[in-house]
Image 1 (tube, rainbow, N blue to C red):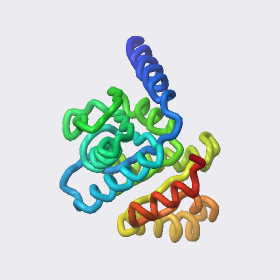
Image 2 (image 1 turned 90 degrees about the vertical axis):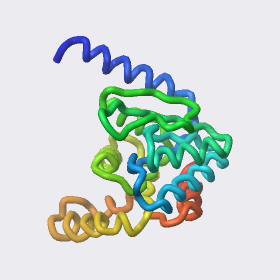
Image 3 (image 1 turned 180 degrees about the vertical axis):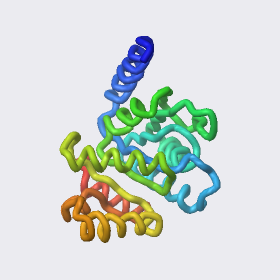
Length: 205
């Protein structure tokens, strides 16, 4: 590895930590950056972010379009703070216009560190490989006590049910590669109201 990359990585981490330390109470939204998914999913992300902003949460997203833009919009239009942690990509990724603070990353792993650093709750909407990568990273860190136990909300039961069935039927029962308690690391919600109430119940505001 060229030595200059080390300093670039260090710079991204230092800038990210410095920015996020300003925010006391935060909720991080994960989900697809694409714009052609079910419009209801995007509206639900906007409504939930709006409710959380009104409850005093800073909303953190990947800063791009799709679910991330909807969540940013909900917080922004509610008069709250909307933080975007964007990644440089050749396609798809653009900075959405509803951010009150933003940082741009060259590396996925430094961005993931920041997305997990300053949050009191992680909220996962439907998404692709990137969303799954971010979910499994957080589940692993919590399961192995590398980070403190933080509420994880899986939003949209229809989307997540096949994966949850896989966890139970294959990982837990058939192959015994997880413990029963690991299935308690997350909560599934189907409406903005349900998710909001779960978060307020689990997070000390």
